[in-house]
Image (cartoon, rainbow, N blue to C red; front, side):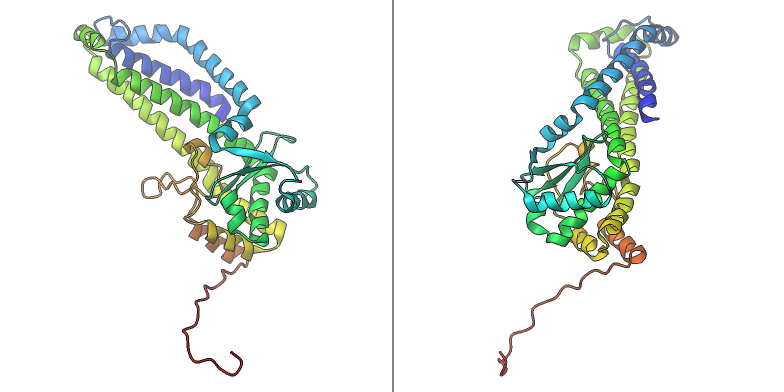
Length: 318
């Protein structure tokens, strides 16, 4: 549905954009609102096929090079068993327990605590973790995080999230290009707006289309990520039989997950600190709610924080 809806959405945005270009003086005006509306519709017959072609080219590039693009955006590097034997063995054992091929393993040399899975089909799946995560988590906690990401692979969440990132990414890219073109048009173009009675209205229509595009991109990422994190947490418990380790890992990750990456990619992370307006557009549920779900449905318990005892006189056993 996402793939089929993208060309339709692009065509609708192109129509609104053309009106904005007429209002900004970037396209000629007929001098009347009705005439400009008809003129934009007429031009749509020529521009609509181009929008579909752009969408298909974007899909082709994303299909072939999605992992390479994500690696460049996040700084992830593929590693072998020889380079990281403990981490690789943990992932391999989990994959074997589910009778599947072990995904490729990648590491981001960053102190942030985060992880994510990518890939569109068998043989191209990959699990990525940060160096900070590896240093901060113990063996059981690291295994729980790897199981969480492997669950995303098993449930084909990674495929949907890659498509959503591509879908949202092209909308954001188009919206930014249009906004800059209309808002920063040359002075000569402004002078041509005098004979255009609907200039202001058309510019508002184009800006509204840009705003709607941004909101749709955010909503797509939000709806595809939020519920799936609960399911992946549950899948990690199913694979490891250790809900306490998943809870402990989430608690350590909380507030320490920030790594530099575009918003479209952050939707795939195990934790995304971007919370939006009062959490309305958050791509992930709060860590506290995820821990509460693990305690309620998986029987997990959060280990109490042990504080050092106050110093006192030494007893006979020190």
